[in-house]
Length: 527
Image (cartoon, rainbow, N blue to C red; front, side, top):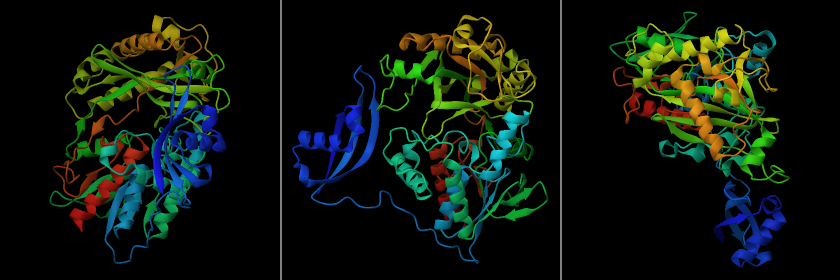
């Protein structure tokens, strides 16, 4: 018999299987010998009270053994030589999971990726720190695996209505992810483990008859009678078939290409701010209400804050406990930061984006504050604001990948930092008045939001913490519209905007789910 129970236990009980099973048997009146095993369905930390508890959702196997397999593995078969083919632009989670789904449906995927494979990409991202040089086609945002490959591997999503979250998590397990992601409340793979998983997906796509073309930049859609029939690349090659466009949120040349070709796109709201970095032990003490921090049994603490300032959201985003800040620019004259963690989350610092919401209606005011001569109603206007802030950050960092930074308390109080604490950001930081040169629309809201968060969590607003500029790539500044049912572009047939770059996802899991949905829609309508 399988019995599902929900139970709250102390952290030390959670970490000891024998103690956990004993408590379960006591609370639910189960003979100890009858409990043959248990399977976690969901695990979360409840730190709302001084006594931290762990909440568990568990399947109990009573008088029967639990199954050996913890997830359902998909059988991918080779696509026949005569099968139809489809083009997938981008090898991030949206593109890779779209390609896998196409194989399931008997269609050969032709994946085109501007960056390098995940192994060679490591050298490109290392050069950013070592030589302050950004390869525009292979960096923290571009290349096999997309922006998620070297940016933590967090798998939390609220997009449960858009597809099968569990199916995506199980798919990642099939290619090597730890099965612990299946029950965690905020599942996480880790930067050091993702490359092997991504390489495994690539090898499966190729083994099943698909193709992956690295270092290949799409420069044009091939159109016939208002229908996409393929793509043309910068080196003059053509690849024919309906197109899933899964380029990620930083492919600005694709947005410009679509605009130049007269294909409907539109500006989209996003959020912009900075990376906020604290010592991880300080966050542990705050979140776990203990001078001793997390102790022996609890994981590194996380936080999530949100408020409204002048009718706009100010919130934390992409929190990385025990993580590092990384350089995420896609051109050498920009400075952009992001965060990541290894699987252990054992680093000295905690970091998170701290951002202010920007709506399309805010474009004219922001353009004025940035002294931009743009059409505020144009579809690329929000992208121009992004670029201007990133370039301003580059100027204030010294025209390298060194990032401008300021102590948290100095930023809130409008003071220049005389010195800075140590930081995980390896290209380096330099003291800079972020409060002065960030657009007032963003900076003033961040100041008030941080004051509010400091009142909510005693010790959070501190001169031990550091703001590092700037976090601008929270989502796409452009939406490529599509029909809500067919998922096809509303004007151009056989074009399927997909994932974060199209404005329809945010993160690894939601992008992967969207890739699968786009593959389903393409096959249903094109073949």
